[in-house]
Image (cartoon, rainbow, N blue to C red; front, top):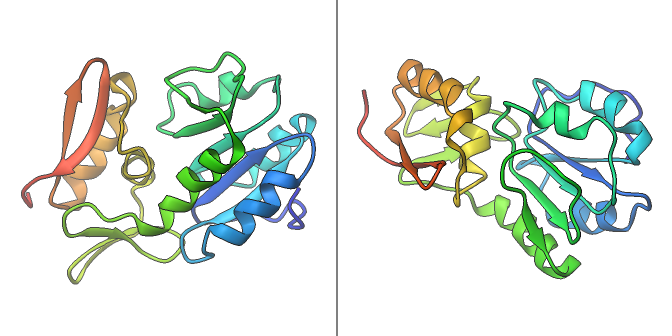
Length: 185
């Protein structure tokens, strides 16, 4: 499980689900620790490792053909999913990559996340100037999905944006919602 045992993590986590730890090793080297922790789980370990990611994994990455219980865990949560083709049936719109280099590059790009004047803090939370927002996991999930996530998953992000005063807004199009620069509430 990526060398972290059952240790609970209160921070952004990239959960890598695969039968062999090759992709985990690549991502561990490419995703800065300040951006996110990278954890690995074989399909039978997903439930145990998922529970140690608080409140849930920030991004899920996979190569396994089948992952029992993953669809139910993803349901209703704003979690971007990247998968190496072919992807198992999962809710939302997983981004399916045809080769591992493209998948690794997409996940590595999380190191450079900034939207307008909002950027991730180290491991958890968001920053806008001197304003710190320490608990906005739905907004952080949408930030990691610039192409958008299913609009049905936007309710918690709306509430977090209203409470945070971050200069971001939600844009809905074609059944997807994504973050865009907005004005401070």
